[in-house]
Image 1 (cartoon, one colour):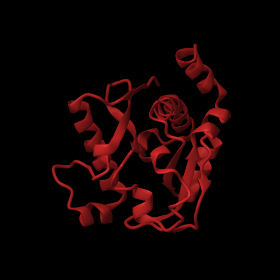
Image 2: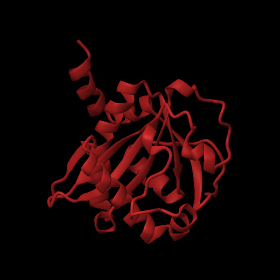
Image 3: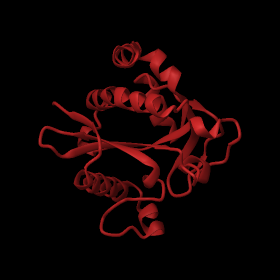
Length: 197
C-alpha cells in the first residue's frame, strides 16, 4: 500500500480533511458531536485557524489519516482547556500542540499504522523546526501513548490520567522536538541537508 503525505494548503482538500475528521468523531465520539452541534458533517473547532493541517492519501487519493499542528494560538491549546496540569512550565512562543491524529479504521492494523506514523514524523518535525516550536502538547490515551513510543514518538506525561471533557481517560503530555529528532536521526540528517549550509 502506497500513501502520499502532504501539508494541506488547498481549500478543497481542507474541506475533505474536516469531513474525514467528522467521520472519525461520529463513529467514536458521539458525545462530542452532540455537545458541539457540528454542522454540515465537518469537524472544525476554534483552533483550526491557528493550525497547520497534514493529510495522508491512500492509493485512491482518499484521505486515510490526518494530524494538525497548532501553534501561536492566542486561544491557548486544547490540552490546556480539557485537562488539568501545570501550564506555566513552557515558553508560549515555543509551544505548539499536535492533535486530531486520526487514522481510518481500515488502516489501523499495527503494520499499516506504523507506516503512516513513521512517514508523518518528518513533515511534522520539519514544520516544528520552521516555526521554532520547541515542544508540543498532546492529550493521549494510555494505549496510544505507548504505541507512539514504540514508533519513536516519545511523549512525556505532564499530569495524571484524567477524564477528558468529551472523550475517554487521557494524559496531558509533551513532545520535545529535539527528542523527536534524536530518536529519528534520519529526520535530522534530511533537515540538515536542506537547511544547514
